[in-house]
Structures are given as structure tokens and as C-alpha cells.
Image 1: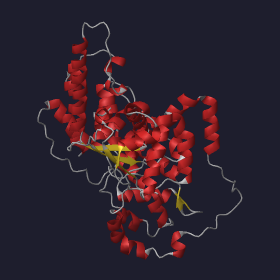
Image 2: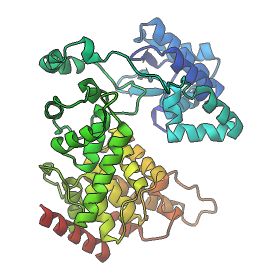
Image 3: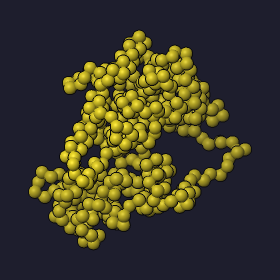
Image 4: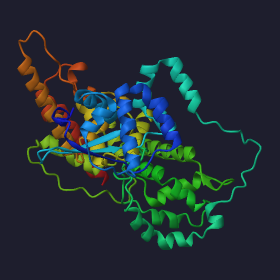
Length: 459
């Protein structure tokens, strides 16, 4: 919990902002799905903030917190607690400027997830299930699940985008459109999909040219851009290879990409590559540029880990780690990788370090989705953008845990520090924290040396 909670005073100023209003379906999601997860005070606070934002065209005037206290009939402590509920559920971001005598707050309202996005969120859906129980949860799923009239026996005669509009104008004006898109803030989007941390070196213009004479409707290429980016980032697929796979995954009746078949063909091609080559070697025509690694404060082994994290795409990195320990990537692990990459919140090098941390340092046999999501979510919140930063965060948590244990030693009651499950090694095994902090042991050193030598030979 932030220190600003304790420093909130009735005369502190605040403004409320949001990118836009919420739609009817988003409001229904808020009322039916989010409501059971929050207190009455939190729900009242949220409605009050939305009312203020809408009155001010989504950027309100400045008010004192005394106004909220009077409206809601609660005290400062209750507002702090209510606000923490909204922040935890992703419905509110709070910013504070404490440089002046009177603190200045910005309450940025976030758009609620649609019911479909809510139920596909493992964390939110699991929490809701625990709160409302199985029967009510099943009723809610039934209420919001997609309802479609069967179209078996019918022929889709809908016009396509390029049947009506010239696609030449798209190519000619794309640079202007891209420039204008930078003016729009997507940070309030309810979607988890983000392109920010995917491989931006992938040339979609080249891919479009390669597919220009195919049966594929090129507007479908744009519609599936995020999926294509995720797959090529995970597996290191070049533009030429992706064009071949998309051609094979095109439905010739609809002239659209069969996304399930696309993912299946990519997975099959990766598995075949592993079987043929033993240790998987990336099909990238060009390896990603490895930035210089600042090894200040790093051991030799840690420095090797950092270099390996920058040198591989996630699929090959996973295969290399697995082959060193005598295992193989499972289909569920590949889905976990695709999921983490699709969130777009962690760079590829950090995802690789996450793989290493789970499989080697934590000695877990496989990548468990819940465990990996917990780590990725924590690192994303801490804005970790490099594997060095991730390693530093782990060391800091271990050091903090050690200090806490020393301070509470010999006390009758020991209050255990709240840590993410993935950072609390005591829950799964008892081992030297110094060993975790430095990642130094001969077995690990051997694995990294083999991994680096293998990569150099393949290069």
C-alpha cells in the first residue's frame, strides 16, 4: 500500500479524469461482475468519481477531499480502503504530487473489462468464483456467454472491405495514419492486448507484399496483426516463413485466416524443427541485436545469463533450457509463453529471464501458468524492462526478507511479510537465500556454459 494513503487529508485537492465514458455493456459488467468483489464504500466511491468525471467532460474541476467525505458520509480511513479496492481491481489509478503543502491527487478512472474479457482473465474470474460460489458463477457465465444463431447451411455473402474500398489508398496513406495514431492514448483500453513489447523489427509491409497475390483478403491481415506479432515473436518466424504459413492457413471459401489452423501449423513446424535439429535453432534470418550488458555488480554466471536472455527468442530459449535438463517443452508451456508475450508488458529478454528463473533457479519442472502470470504481473507493475532489473528485484526481495526475519527473531509473534508467492521460496523449499541471490552453483554454471556454446555453434 502506498505511503500516500496515510498522508491523505480532507483539504487535499483532487481532479478526476478518464479517457472516455463507459458503454452500456461495460457498465453492466461493473454492476454485475465487479460489484461482488468490492465493498459498498468502494462501489459508492467509484460511482461518485464517474459522476464527477462525466460532469467535467472526463477532466473534472479541482475539488477538496472534504467534498467526497460529505457525499459518501465516510471518513478518511474508509476512503483509503475503498480506493485500494478500486486500484486492486484495475478500475482506478491514483497519482499524487506531494511537493506542495497541500497534496494534489489525480484519480484516473480505468475502463472496466467487458464480460468476455472479465471471464477470460484468470485472476478476476477466479476471485469472482471464490466470492459468489459455483452456482452463481455458472449463472453469470450463462448470462454473458455469446449467443449466436447457427449458420450451418448458410453461405456468407457479406461484402469485404476491399470489395468497396481501394486497398491502394491504404498502402499509400499508411505513414500518415500511423503518425496520427500516436495522438491517441490507448492506456485506458480495457483490452490486455499490447504491441509495445513485441518484436517491432517484423516488417508487416513486406509481409503484405508477399501475400498481395494470394487468396487472402488483406484486411484480414490487419485484423490479425496482434496474433501474427505474438507468434513470430515467440517462435522467431521471418516474414517469408510467416507468409508461407498464412497461405497454408487461409480458408479458400472465406479468403480469411483460420487462426486456429495458423497456430496449429506454427506449433507443428516448431516441433518438427526440434525433432530434426535436436537443440532448437531459431529460423530468424537475423538474430536480434544484443545490447551491451552492464555487468556492474554481476557475477560471471549472472552476466552469462543476461547475455543468453538477449540472444534467444522465447521458444528457442525454453528449448535450450529444457534440453540441458533432459526435458522438452510441453504444449501447455508453449501456450503460457504465447500468453505472456501477447500481454505485451514485458520485453522478450525479461520473459527469457522469467523462464530461466522458474525452470532453473526455482527448479520447477514446467512453466505453470498461474505461477508465471504472478511473476509477470508483479514485474510489469514494477516497470521492469531488462533482465538485469528483474534480477535486481529478486535480490532486493530476498534481502528484504532476510532483514525482516532478523528483526523478528526471538519474538513470540512473527508477522510474516506479504510477498508474491513466486518470491517466497520458503513455501516450497528451504534453501540458502544467498544461493538464490547470487545464482551461483556449479551445476547452474555448467548449464549456462553449455547453453552459450550451443548458441555460438548454431550462430
